[in-house]
Image 1 (spheres, rainbow, N blue to C red):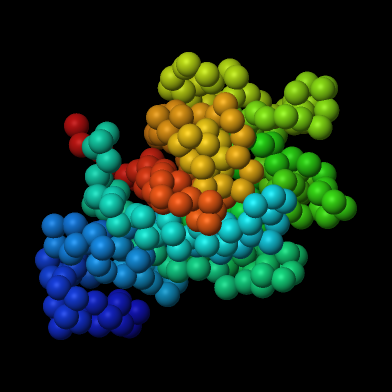
Image 2: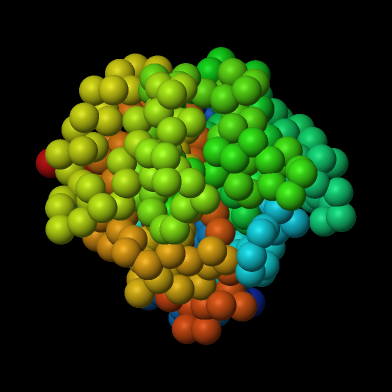
Amino acid sequence: MHRLSNQLLRWSRPSLLAQGISRPISKNIREQSSHDRKEFFKPISGLDMPRAGGIATMMRLPHMESSKGLDACFVGIPFDSGCSNRTGTRLGPRQIRTESCLLREYNTQGAAPFASLRVADIGDVSLSMYNIKKACESIRKKYKEILENDCVPLTLGGDHTISYPILQAIKEKHGPVGLIHVDAHADSSDEMLGEKIAHGTPFRRAFDEGLIIPEKTIQIGLRGSQYSVKDGGQSWQVEQGFRVVPAEECWYKSMSPLMAEVRDMMGQVPVYLSFDIDALDPAFAPGTGTPEIGGLTSIQGLEIIRGCKGIKLVGADLVEVSPPYDTNGTTALTGANLLFEMLCVLPGVKYSD
């Protein structure tokens, strides 16, 4: 109760009126009519505060200091020390939050996440930019704390290195999980320039440590030139039992039939969703570090995430948005939308009939 009192004090009416905000947060407070009712936070509407205004949290949700009392949270990891090409993804969380001011409470499928789950933005993980192993340990510890509070983390990256320590923390909570990995690259190399931890190795490390269930792992959208002609660069994953769906198998198709297969494949095991923005073609998401032509469309990206409805998602990330290469903000805006759609398919989210 002490934490809740502090939260309401931070969003007190005088301070809100000073910002020109009244109705959305006062509505949140009114909804908590007794100790038995959950307080739902809602994004500040563009009808109550100009979209250019307000504090740049994800969807302009309240900022909380921890995940205690939350069902789901948005959390940023401003890290790009594992990048192999163009850097800048350390700025991804900040820009995704800025572009997310355009988002509204409901998606077009009738999902009502903010009337179903208690959601807030808990800020960024504090970590070292100069030591990858120390950074990964900081991420693992932070996510262990988030998960101990029974909160589902939705992560704003950051480069793809971050999925490795997140999965370490998730295993501590849920055991090995199924994995839906959407990406232009397999990120399953054993090492990069002699290093075992980088943005091209997270899922090799996850396999080595038993963090994922190989026969319940699928990689969608892989493409681009390869280091080997053997199996299109997919031989190691296939040998371990991963299902690989190259981008060429996605061209000119809806992803809905594939996602029906994925739901059957996953069953009721806990599942983690990792979405690299470079899975999308550079025409839709140019602001990334390792772009590859011939990728998925933004429509297919939506179909993949919406196709996760009914899957027992225990966490998700959106990685590799690099604002320095995203001159119009389109990539960050797309990332913000995809993160919102991830929230919409979490277990417990209500849908209108």
